[in-house]
Image 1: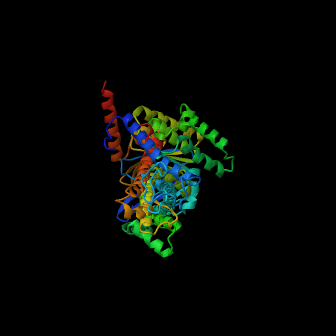
Image 2: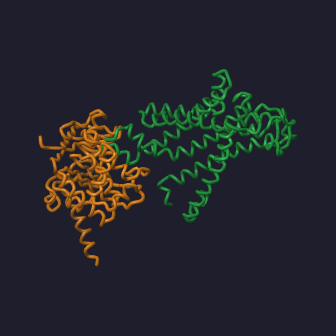
Image 3: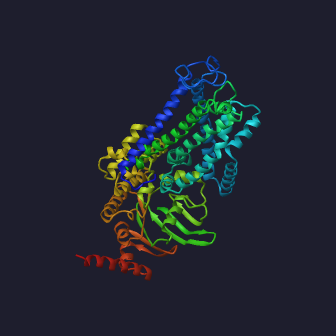
Length: 282
Length: 270
């Protein structure tokens, strides 16, 4: 995006590199998450190793202060991060897209009310909203964390959907579709959703990254998935006391988190460049 | 009165602080080609939106608009949806923005085709729709229909896009076709082709035409009867031949004189 004026072929190549790098990062994490269902180097609660061992052939990522294998925890963490990301973004997208389109179609009064509602909710940090939901449910579990983060993300998705829908509604092809007798339902499904998804998709990828990080924060605060689950956030929390003696315990989950968030964003960018027909040729 | 397909009586369009179209009355008979001439802001496009019931909520219409025997003004949206396509279809000025940028052209034409087949209780299966789309593309004389069906709007030329837009309008088999400045965004050669295409198609299919343009020459080629509009009012109406050669109103005279000077200036060039 920095040098938009460069020749078209190089922009394309850059788009492809973005796509492939994103695919490798996300693909690797997805693979680790899927494999963790069938196989991990050790059992999660297996305290076979020595305390705080450095990475070695026996323990690829070292061990924690109870002697549990960190690579096993990283794999389970990948699974949890992906479930949280998909779940939270899914919930946030359903609530957000529905209310956003509703607002764009609504009467002036309802539209203003919903827009103000979105703005007020956005002013609260997502993490704070999520903590309130966890508190309201009175129990910390993975499901609660996903629900909480989904609700926390929905106003952002809603606001973007509202603006994008209004933009599309102002286009001539919507008038053309209406004048040929297309019902509003069909217009939303055939014209509005396909035209907002490329823009929304990139934003949802961003939200995915934020959701994964927010879950890590919730777990770090002890409000996420309870102990037997090894989320990356919990790993960071547990490693904080030993960060000077066994830095790998904090660095590795941090790197995993970083790789997933950046990978998702690169992948979304690359996908948009590949599948947007208006850009495909140039 | 009974043979009028479209009858507009005392149509006034106003926002809370401005009158945009005032006391407009005209009618179009079944199969007739009617031209509306006016400069930008004269209210011609608003009039066409009022006929299709697509005015912005801030614009309040009064008067009567009767299309195919049904009153448009004040009609519930549900009835309007059924009327659009069945009674009236529109071709817009800028075909690039009038087509969905993310949908292949074939599917865009298939939408109204499928709705019409369902409405008239015919077979709306995939094969029947594909056959109709193919026939429509041939009707608007588009080359290589197989390639066009899979193309996106930005991949074809402006003239081809407008032909697709015309095919979409015809797909509804309307009784009235509204063409709102359909040639303005095109180059001169393409303009002439599109004008010929629209004229021959409405004649062939017996569709009435409401042709809106600021270009006297184009309207003169298309319309049998014309109406001249200025600042939301009708200035003059009558047979095209008469209005364009012996205008009664001073504004129309100045338009005709300007167009003539322009033509002469063009012909003066080698």
